[in-house]
Structure formats: C-alpha cells, structure tokens
Image 1 (cartoon, rainbow, N blue to C red):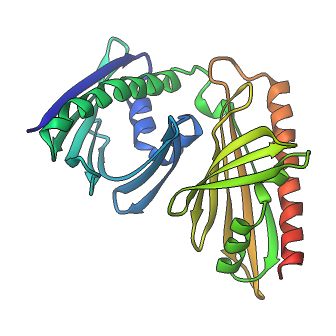
Image 2 (image 1 turned 120 degrees about the vertical axis):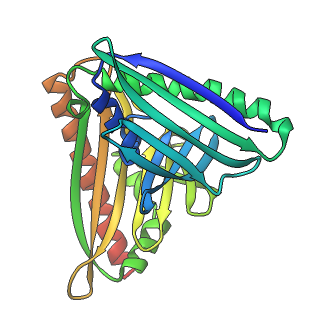
Length: 292
C-alpha cells in the first residue's frame, strides 16, 4: 500500500524566493518555531530536529535542489516505523505575478492500518508548513530586517573535548539572566535535553538543548518573549594555540514578522543580547577558573 498526497498554496513572492526558503533547511530554525536545528551530515543529506507538542522528532533526508527546474526532490534516510519509505518533491511555478508552491509525498507504510494516521498527519502539518513559507516569503521588508545576531569569543585553557564537557556540566544557560536562576535538565534523547530555568521556584524559560560532542552546544528557547518569534544560539568550541581553545558564543533573535521593526526596538534588542552574552562570557571564565 502506498500513500500519495499533494498540497499547494499560492504566494505573492517570486518563485526563487520561495525555493531559497525551502532549500535553506539550516536557516529555518530562525523563523520556524517548531524547527530546533538542522545541519548537513553528508553530500545532499540534512538532519533536522523538531520539537512540538512536547514531542521530539529527528530525521535525515536526502535532497536534490534543481534551481533551473525550480524543484526540490527529497527522500527520507532510514525512516522510523511505521514508515518503510518516504519521498516527495517541491515545485515552484510562476502564477499570476506570484508563485504556486506544490509539495507531493509518497509514503509506503509497513502496516496498512497506519495509513490513515500518516495521511492525517500530512494533511495537518503540510498546509501549516506551506502557510509558514508563504508568510515569510511575503514579508515586504525582507526576513533579515527582523534578525538580531551577536557573537562573543572567550579564550580558555584546555582541549575542545574537555571544554565541551564543562559547558554541559555547568549551569551556564542560567547566567544569561540578570537574576539568579537555577536549571533543571531533562534528557529527551541521546545528546538532546530540555532545560527548565526557574527563579525562586517560578518558571523563567524553557530551552531545547542539543549537545554536539567535540563541537559544543546548540539551543533554542521554547517559550518566546513578547515581540519575539524565535530565539536560539550556540556555544561552539574551536582549537586555538598554546593549549587554548576559543568558545564562540552566538545568540540570535528573530523579532515578530507581522510588524515593521522600529529602530528603537532593534537597538533595545541588540543591547539586551549583547548584555546576555557578556554575562555568559563571565560565567564561562569562572567555570574555567574553578575547573581547570
């Protein structure tokens, strides 16, 4: 038994704008609330982590981007039960000054009784995904105008592996906040955890956290602040010289997409992100002193 589905939407943006959005899987976590992280794991292969409804999903897919033909074909690598195989195609066609976006799925379930649930999941999730791409593509000011990104580098003694271990052991995320916060970490899967931050027992923030052995930590806030669509970042450890390593701290905020970003709002957010990174850097230096 094979499940075949087709979903489509029309957007006012140009075909290449929409194709670029779908092709950039690694950039999607900046504007897609349920997308936690994505990275290339091989030639034409991407792994994506998603978290929604208190459920974690992670999968790899192989893709071929044909810009001349304006299509993206994909196939899941080793899909999880009850799916034996899953593949499909995105197409982007000019339509009335805009673009008709169509995505097809072909799924072979291991158990025919699972077909109805799989189809219902596609009928629920794919239209929402299409609507998200339409929303982002039609932003008149451009997506980048809503981005605030800042970085800071801290140089520490040690090895990459040792410093990554210290990042995972320490209560570093709590240092982002001016008030004293405590962290409770709940494992979700190998290298994936949920961090809950509280102040005096009251909830402060929840974070998805992905540990990358030999590299660092990537995170995304799950309960966004007012005026913010997505908030995420990373602590990446790189070898330096003389027995030292550099820890590159990066924090990114995507401001709400449904309104223009005022200069005062942008400047205020830049200042807040910079201050948070300074506090993280200070806490990181203290960890280095206490755990040489």
